[in-house]
Image (tube, rainbow, N blue to C red; front, side, top):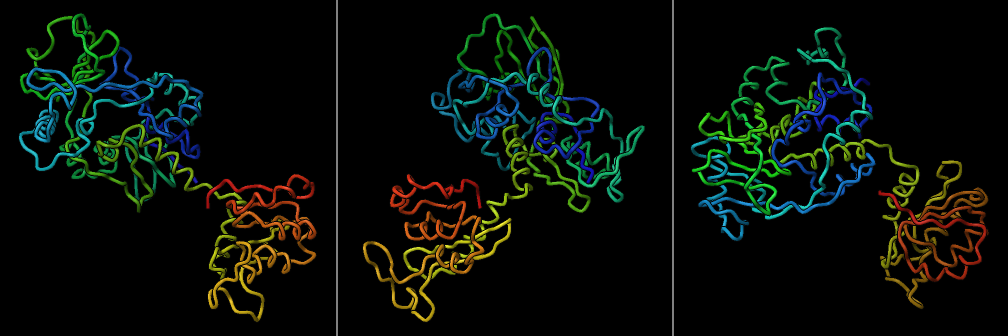
Amino acid sequence: MTKYILGGGITGLIWAFYNPQYTIISPDIGGQMTSDNFSLGPRFLIKTEYTEKLLKDLNIQAPIKTFKIGYCKNNIVGTAKELNITEEDRKNYFLKSRGLKNINEVPITVMNSFKDEIVGFDVEWNEIIKKLSEKVKIINNKIIKINTNEKILVSGGNDYDYDELISTIHASLFFKLIFYDTSAKKCENNCKDITYVAVKNKSLKTVFNYIYVIDDSFPFYRMTFQDNVVIYEFIGKPSEKDLPDHDIIGIKTVYGCKIIKDLNLDGIPEANIKFVGRYAQLNHSIKTEQVTEMAIKNVEQKQRISLDSYYMSVARVIALRGTCLRKRVGAIIVVDNKIIATGYNGAPKGFKHCTEVRCNVVNNHCIRTVHAEENALLQAGEKAKGGILYTTVSICVWCFKSAVQAGIKKIVYFENYNINDLKFLLDENKQIEMVKYNGQC
């Protein structure tokens, strides 16, 4: 199957890194993360198990840092608690940062849910992009049209047939490529441009890494402090009078990157097209951390399960037939990757089950039941020799000895159950490998 990714930004790179069956098609790489002179707003990687994995997989060591968040209200800068930031403040900030006059509902994630700090990795984005781009397949080309009926990506030169397509580009641009003009216009109207203005910081002293500016007296809505630079964020293009009057390092306008209302776009399933990322899905809450998690989980969902997982899953289903009230247990015996016998715990043939007359317990063991492992061994007979016994709990002393006698070479168990009773046998054991299952099923 031919699988492509539209867009070479951080989202496309991470998706292709963890899903190497995809090839990126893009005329440029890195997106907003590759600004040379200054960062476009706060740029750090929130610490999660998935971002930790990303950095480990890329062999990148990044320091963990606590990023301080400030708020500016009534010309005073402080924490959310110090300034008593309210829902009304959140609403005012949302209106200011989107260039709106009114709004019915404000997402709770606006202003980072009033957090005062975030723990994250202080990463060098250029290093991440460089390493990712070295490890993925990239076609340097620009798509000018998408034929969703025939599943063809059209460029100025080559055309590309696709079976599956991931779009990480802005939703408005994507809909233009498929000539959905109404949808494209809707997406455009739902976004505003942002202008970033970087200025040398000569006098501003603060403990905060970035500050949300609620006051309308300031034309910018956020300030980010990076080394000796302050980056001011404006909605749209600021006028000359709104710009700082000294030491401007650079100005950059990014089109359509301030989302007014989350549309949560999924894609076009009938054309095998999926949207991934903040601007493709038009969902402000999607950050690099969420993209990384999505990319890794996509791999996990599509990976073929191991044989151990397959056999243990079968054993766990068989356990549902068990009739002992104390614990249901299932077991199977596998020889040459074939299941030759199964067993669950229950009363011998012709005897009443625990579910009918309750358990007969002696020395903390139910003596009414035949154990699952023993039933499987009896069913297999001589065919068990050289086989692997999968069981949902660690095997008891008597069944372990029976397994040795039957020639079982390995026992895989799901959970511990009185395993200490086996210690004296395991210390002497030379015939059977005893392994605790550590996968998922």
